[in-house]
Amino acid sequence: IWTECLRVVEKHVNEQSFSTWFKPIIPARIDGSVLTIQVPSQFFYEWLEDNYVEVLKLAIKTILGANGKLEYAVVVDKGNSQNQPYMVSYPQGVNSSAAAKKKENLASAHSPFDLSSLDEQTTLQSNLNSNYTFGSFIEGDCNRLARSAGFAVANKPGITSFNPLMVYGGVGLGKTHLVQAIGNEIKNGPEEKFVLYVSSEKFVNQFMDGIKDGNIKSFTNFYMQVDVLIIDDIQFLAGKGRTQEMFFHIFNHLHQNKKQIIMTSDCAPKDLMGLEDRLLSRFKWGLTADLQMPDFETRIAIIRKKMQSEGIDIPDNVIEYLAYTVDTNVRELEGVMISLIAHASLSRVEISLELAKTIMKNIVKDIETEVSIEFIQKSCAEYYGIKLENLKAKTRKKEIVIARQVAMYFSKEFTNHSLKSIGYHFGGRDHSTVIHAVQAVNDLMETEVSFRNAVLEQKKQFKIRSY
Ligand code: ADP
Ligand code: MG
Image (cartoon, rainbow, N blue to C red; front, side, top):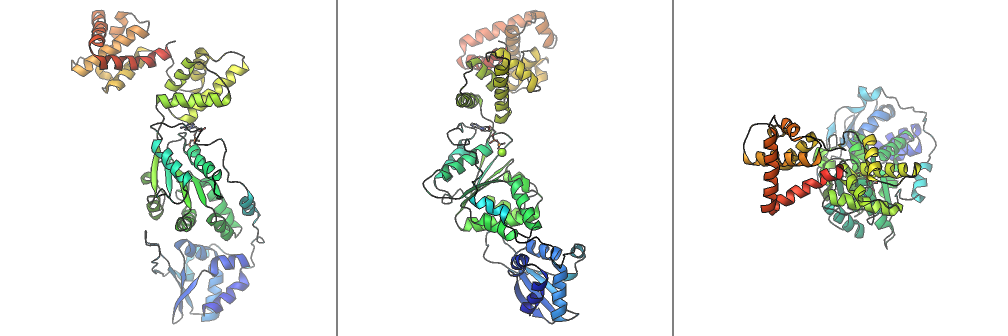
């Protein structure tokens, strides 16, 4: 019976749509005038309902008569037991009103089978930027796990237990760089592998185009033939159910065939809103590693490396200044460096701390370029883990007293405020309290090495700002 229905359908849809959407259907059972067909997924079912409801209706009525009805059985994916589909009946049938409002043009308005856009890509490169390598990716505590997992994957794609590899972290922390480094490493490796890098945004757009042109098959075929799929910024798939569905199938296919999948996201998988659970649960099969903001030393190394690759020399104090003051993300750090270089070469001056400060003021908002009492207080409160207002309060708790004395000591050393004024800024204390504080800090530095080191460490960041 289903074969007869197909014959009707065939006359009304083009060849491509027919093989994409009707060939995979399996007739499940016939119950009087109700035919149940099995479709591969929920997405598939919705797609049929949205686009082919009229033609299905026509086929059913033609073959089964006016009372003919259609029901769907969807193969439901159950977590990890992918090979055990079971059936669910959907009662909506062909009369679904939601589907009916979207009419499929039976005369077939589809463009002729057109593979050009995806075909180009088969011969096209992997979309990798060759500058993003492991060599140019500076290692630090902030990225050690992600980097070494990435390196392992690059050496044995698809075979390590890091499949999929999921790298997450905030904007500008090196996700794209790292995953492309993996891609480049594999591409330049001994084995012939088809590595493909794609942003999730592009993936979504290609999928949409595929739908529009009736070209889903070539879309999936294209993705299913890659050896290493790198898909960037997966958070972009949030709420895009159909693309997720398609990605899910591609993911399964690749994973089953021991192909490597690498993904990035701007947050931890558990915080990825709008992604289907079954997709998220698959992400956990492999390894999830995060990227943090590089610490001071790593920032210095990153700046050095960049400057070196640009063939530019800048003074150490400028490097330190940049590393200290830009602590948001690496991209911003690079932005400041680029402006600095541009300004210096445009106005034909040397790169100096002076210039760096000016530029910093212009491009990075809220940056403290001068050392004020407020800045010192904020910094000390943070350093000693106490509340800012406690520096000005009456409390005599030991750790607060120490933090307060250190803050006074730095205020004396790094600002032009008088002792009186400093006292005033610390809850209206008098100048003798400030003198006493400075003395106490000096004494403690003599006797306690750890305290001394802490003060010197903290001092660096004031010094760098007060050149
Ligand atoms: P994301 O994709 O996480 O937003 P990117 O990979 O685009 O971040 O990184 C932003 C910039 O910072 C890039 O130019 C990249 O080369 C650089 N970068 C980030 N982390 C490092 C690192 N550890 N070493 C060297 N450069 C880095
Ligand atoms: Mg990125």
